[in-house]
Image: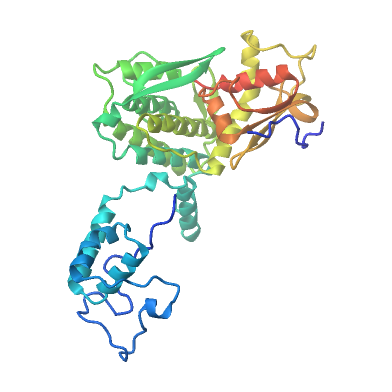
Length: 431
């Protein structure tokens, strides 16, 4: 089959009635009778337009209600709970009664205070769009390198989630999940423990940049798991909300440092103990983990949390796709994946058997994954399998939050290659 054709193996099955319209902004209830608090109404020859109900036959006709009745309706009107006729009567009355207009304004302001701010439910791409607009108008003297913007954005989003947490939320239980070998595994902690985990592992980048290491002590801790356990074990008490300040200061220091270097240190190696990543990839990795653990925290406190902005999500998926050949080779060496079909290793830089990984969604794209050697080059001419996944679903697979068997994938071609790649994607996860 061609590299671009769609395959037929995919399964095809994969607020109430509006409230009456509210009046104008609080403090500006003026209708046809002029501004609020004018103390009277205009006559027929006063130069103003007649009431809307008189000129618009389709509009509701205000009922004739006494002043006490209209005053009693102000609370319901402020909550937009009146019928259309009652709303029209109240609004007509407010244009001529300054006392009721003042009361209505106070009630509307009180209703505004009762509504919970919903800033965290906004489109996560809004922050990026606003910053892009600002930076287009006034470029920064010290810009953040493009490859560090996803880390900057995801740490800012997580910090916004944490800003109003009380003690109950900070100590809410969270289960860290990842995929080990052939099965999923987990570790129980708290919201504060998750932030401590991020602080400890982000310290790998801080150390590479010459910043202060958040871990104290003489015993070296090199891998993310070792650093996390060392940080958790260094205190006699479990982490509390006080961990937020050092974590946030560290994230700011990392972004500030890579910005002042002019982005020229993107190839600086960052050691993860058993392997290394260049700084640009390490920051994408940390942005990915920050988002995944922010979702863990949001789930623990029952709060919605959206995926990253599309271009940041794409960068995270691209990193995972580039790591897949190495992860597949590691599983082969451990006897967890089928050996390559070729009788000899593919020469570095030469094409070999490949799987087309199609990621759908705003952060998606297509990648050709070499199957026989991480040194080989993916080739459409040597394509033996095709897998399609949703962008967020693929990220949850790579985070160890979805098992390879449960990953909802459209797939066609060599089933052994498909299984090996899905398991290799899950094996990218870690504590």
